[in-house]
Length: 358
Image (cartoon, rainbow, N blue to C red):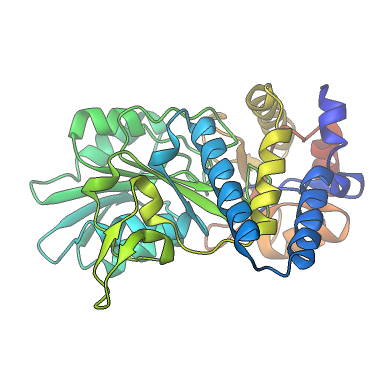
């Protein structure tokens, strides 16, 4: 499959320069067809009966296995969730953090991670990495670690600057539990889990699946308390609510996920080409070069598929104007920046349309 053939999978790209997979990726024809067919299937079977329910469980199992394969792990370490925020809440609440504990994060995290950290009861120490070279991130984050630190929680790729954080080095140097927000990494750049403890996945962003849908990798499921149980947390339950947990990370499943969403992500994962990471990186570099000829870029080099820059005017107003002429980018609140997300479906014309519209 060539880049042109791969791009042709997405109907929206016939009209828009879609440069916002950091929020929501485009949906392919195969994904839309799978979702439509699943709705029809469910309606025909009345959403009832043992065969129908067994089919749902099989679909959940296939998606769990496909996400596991994407991350290079086993299915028993993957929970199906509604979002990366769900994953962060599952981990943070399961660690039973309290006032005597500390958590280290960065100054460029999404609310989906920051909010669970804030309500955990632990003291949150913030490492200021966004205004510094990425090469300084490891030392900057480690300098915030104290004997009371129980968790490092940060993004693999920062959603504002696009910087790639040294998550594996942090794990090796600190030996602390590490929760990684993978919203801007999984599907955009190659991901290796290594010794990482927890890694969240957003299925509606770079994986081009429907929303809301996510996943959570848990390296040692039995060591994390089930603090936010759903029906899928148990394989047996008593009248008082005590239960025997489901084997593996399935005990952390957020609950019922709509079958059309599961069918959609299954189709989306099957449609991703092997060369997707190289193509996305090349498009991000081209975007930096062309946008950088006129506008101030954020960051010193391309480290991810996100390209943030300072527009000429109010970012929200510029973003709205660009959408009106068929270019989709994100304005980043409280930063003064716009962000372009470059995927394997992006082509030169998309970036040229962005520059011309700016």
